[in-house]
Image (tube, one colour):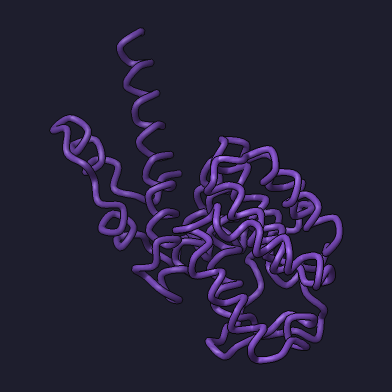
Length: 241
């Protein structure tokens, strides 16, 4: 079942126009998505509450204000100056071995300095050492998605594809960055696996949170790309028959 306007998509393909994912997905009937999920084997995902108020990881919360500022500054530079940040992060990791965010940032730094083997190693260490640290799993999942290994994502999250499974039952509100990052990953997994109902559900959630965020736009493009590939396959079969 396609929730998108297939006719308009085919027109774009024939006219060699780049379709606007956001415009196409705005036409999706959310009620149909919800109704379909209610009828599905796994049912409708649990409702989610999110906040923009700071939600600090336990060990990070124990740091001094100065140390927190230093780590935040590293995060701002880890994408633009990854090589310079690696020795700083290694030193901090030695000083704070129980701080998962340092391992995570180090993985990002290795990735952006073209050191994929070291990136993969530190990300696996992060998940192993800090199994309850959601962003460790998210960054490892990103690593595999970037390399076309979407099937690895289910294993990383132990087939638990709703955010509440990754926190204590007492936690009922999540930080906006947790919700956004998690559902971007899970939505991409669903899109690449062909489960468009759940992929679009994740996308619609991201639209409610932050419609113009790069992760929202990326998931929209993933969904559209999958739909376009389906159209392309049908056209190829028609030519061959």
